[in-house]
Length: 238
Length: 187
View 1: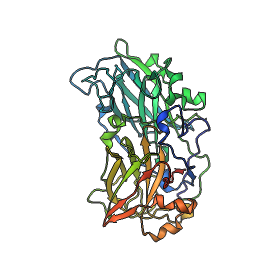
View 2: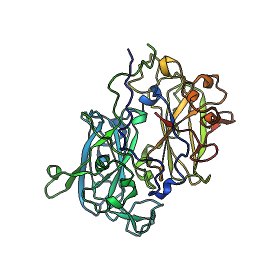
View 3: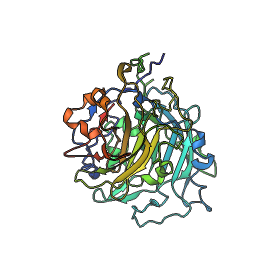
View 4: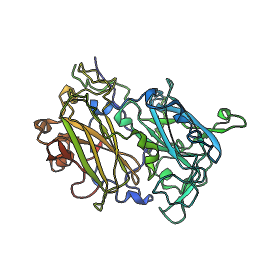
């Protein structure tokens, strides 16, 4: 038998709209025609499979990618990748990127006059374990200005890219820090309509995960689209 | 138990820092069977300007119509090392290009075969969540019966079919707005 389970639509209010005027760059980059609603097929419920061979064991430590130690506050960011049914997503790829402690990216498009840290590239990756857990060692990223509106600053954040078990569970999101006063001014954060869903993007201070005299810790769970409870039709016609 | 899903957020302008390591513009290696094809195109914004910071991801079956995924239970051969995943960023003019093999037909609804296609996801700054679309192949009789194409208004179907530019070379653009706006899917 090859019945497969499709994926539920997201709970309303958890996802942003394409056209979101507060984020100015959406103006010329959102579709103006409605999306065409179509059923899921084998093409959508499958997706690329990555394994431990795709990442090096050291890829999750952003503080050891260069000769010297990066400037800034060393932190541990860990959590689980789950779906909406609270099912862990084992052996799935997690990619992250972030600014350095001064709020600067080593990227040609970043013209912010904060210093580049020669010991910090700001990219990491990991494969989740059998329980869907991941862990990164990094530097707390700095806030930085951008030109969306007058006196616009991005709150401190880490970009997360995830795959899950299907091409339609692909998700790119951002992790924020608890108590950041910039959050209510941020179009990205505020683009999530439902407040409970918005809060899901804020990591939690993780006192128990801290390493004494070494690093504070934050927990950040990521929740991807969940499966339908009942199997969908037999996709293969068997 | 039910959890609130994480909200999607934009990849922003600095996506290359985290994502370039997995760039794959040759989806099928030399050992993979099938008709070789290069697909190139541009990602264009609402003013027709090339988007220089977009990322295109591709997912596809092999020439037999088999996905490299544990939930594809078809009894079809799969080449070792064929993942079927591509990731290509756009260049300064919004152009992208990748090489692959034309996929076979994969099952659709009620087991009826779909026309050969590539699944495509597009990310960019100014986009808070990705867009999903497909690339179909020109001159393919199966396109007329494809269960997804049939759900697309006839006048817009051409946006999903690549154009033949030369032997083995296809063109397909992502047009975000306006005339010839690409059809994007909500699965």
